[in-house]
Image 1: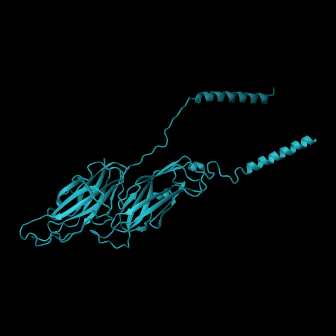
Image 2: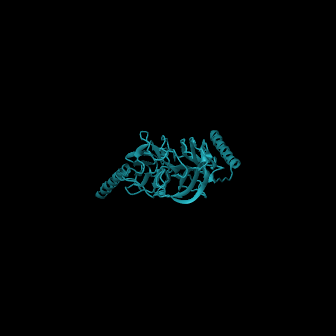
Length: 220
Length: 187
């Protein structure tokens, strides 16, 4: 075996080892394409609805995010919504994010906080149900509700790439069971304040409570 | 050629011929098209107010000439355009003994208070008993269709009817407990 042949064998062996190594650890330490710490092209839109007991700001489309941080990365599309209690009672907060386009139900998580409490912390899909009442806002007081969405770690790009998720934010006030009714006009026993939600062709009354019996005017 | 080989060749020829014949029998030109991913969802009709289940007024010892004003805010959050009507509910007594005026407008800041209220029109003026008690008999709460996130404030002015008949008010005259309902029906 000549020197040239030996050199050729050595070069071939080294090349083979290199190819084998590359095949065994193709992306070791390097995230897959599109998830390299740069934003990924998943989209989310949040539309805010008005609320009976609260003055909400903004109302309408409050968030239009065209990208998310890659799964597992810090940060995420965030929206801040202010709510002022315009009812006569201290209210706890309950919220939900109903889906108009549930494209990221299984791919995204959501965390929402307000009035000193965490309102929602979990999968985006499960946020469509009313959250457990939390926090407390006094009549006339304002709080900021912050909502942040993230992609779950370890997702394949197919789970989020190019998807557009549209959510509708709703907030309701639940009278604090321990609150003392105020002396403002017509104070009565507090009750639940769930906004009526009735499907198509149904009717939805908003009712001012029955007025207690009124002792009468003095006669002439 | 050995006999076994002849037999094998014959079998192959017969098999190949049968296969060709079979393809001829079952051959066909085909084409399909489809329309996947269909879905349908209803819209919503949703309306709420800021009373937190608290009465708008609970008045006692009212005399003629004195009126009380209270405000309430109503919000429509349904996705379908709707017509909203206001009507009275509950049991009403002595409906002709009390006056009621309902105005629509904006600017009322909190439930009950009418500070900042700016009237845009009067929905109803008459006796408490004269206000309808059903959607059909109710008054149009805005005068036009409601869209999602429409907000309207209402000012209620309530008073007792002046009655100069001698000795007509020696005893208390009460309205009984009554309520007001805003009902939305999609257009």
